[in-house]
Length: 359
Image 1 (cartoon, rainbow, N blue to C red):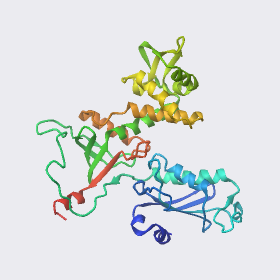
Image 2 (cartoon, rainbow, N blue to C red; image 1 turned 120 degrees about the horizontal axis):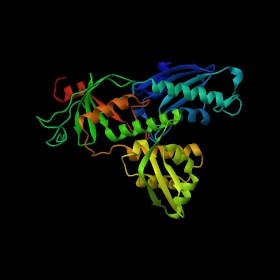
Image 3 (cartoon, helix red, strand yellow; image 1 turned 45 degrees about the horizontal axis):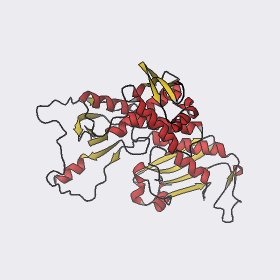
Image 4 (cartoon, rainbow, N blue to C red; image 1 turned 180 degrees about the vertical axis):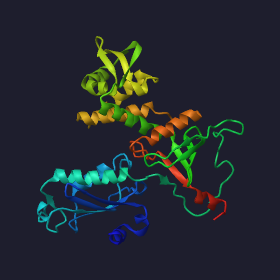
């Protein structure tokens, strides 16, 4: 119930939550999910109950936090108040003196149901973050809003329309700020897009989609390159050759500690392939705790997308900015990059009107 959730989360927090109500595999999952911007540095704002009994359960907590993966940054924890209902004979409440912990007959089914319910709710929501500004008035000193990156009068910015799609509102391109942020206008105000974070999300999902389709991910080089690796790099190459091949690297031993590079991931075909390969091997070396093949491939996928994305400071043409917005709208999770950072925020028109004392 909303009133009970508000009693533990607080009225202001409740105003920034999403209603949750799904039944999966006879498991009823209901309650309220905090939007990503509510994420905290601790788990104190997490409330969980099973059959109307407040509990603590690491498995269920992990299911919920995994559903928020890539939506909130690492080290931050989502806010929620979730009530789960299962058949009484499917849960044992007599495993803790104070009945705070419970045991379930089918942990896997419950984990899957809770994870799916939370994840689907988040993926159906509009998670565009409003800019939080303290106070109703803002004092702007000269130079505080530098606009030199926006083309001056006479320069042509194609005011292209980007239709509403996949939870993103319709918007019109305005320009680029400091060669880092793309500016667009929506019906409710100004949208500011972080071009690097947005492109990271696009490339990451493109790699995953190509992998699911089992389509070609490699772009052959006109002239194969020989790369001399150091002993540590060569050992990592041998250990993770399969993951590198899935990403699109066409590599083969070429004697000693030298490898022959015949192809690179399609999304990086225009970039420095040698440096990317060395960076990937260095990333695997740093992630000493990653042992499972899926974990290694996930880390390599993230690093490939990060290194291939446009950077802060890269100038973009109007066509490139429009293309970026269209591609972002086509992603499953357009509001955050895989680090959990927002790809965009919105400044509501009513806030601008307050600055100019129109409200």
